Image (cartoon, rainbow, N blue to C red):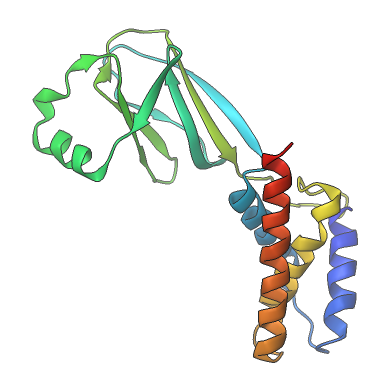
Length: 193
């Protein structure tokens, strides 16, 4: 389905419950797609960064929703715990250069990934495997990244959020259950693929 087909389906479905017009419908369709990708991890990618001797942090870009794995020169790097991060902050001299064993994420306008110890060699591959934020459905002809058999879940998400103030709680609860059950089925299919 295209964005316009999703809008039409949602608009027709909403008419059964409310005569209100929802200008935020397209935004909710986008948010639905993002929520499904986050919950199912159905859209993944890998960023390959080149290490720079003495450089702790590297830009990730704004399309990273969740880190799945990080490798430095083919060696797996573990996420740092809060305790480790507090230790590194308190004793920066002990986070000397070497082969990174841990990474952390700084969520800023442009998210950063940082390493400890700080990489001591340039031009080694840092592979960041992640769940990718889907592109916004900008035009009526854009297609969602969600597999077609699950695209109605995007509409369910949008309907729930548009009608949250206009329908009975039991109807909303049913829609939420149908949505979450569908997302769980999709996640299960992806895991068993």
